[in-house]
Amino acid sequence: MLLAEIPLPPTGGRYAWVSVAGDLGSPLAGVHDLRITLLGDVRLATFLFT
Image: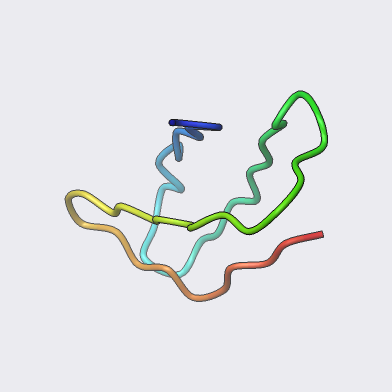
């Protein structure tokens, strides 16, 4: 079951960065798997849950 899909906008440069956020709608209970799929020319430096 897909809980969220967050598109990443172009940053305009190799060392430029952007912050994105997503909403799950309602609190989740239990254990869930996380999958991050990066397509194309993408660099991921930091990933954070809050």
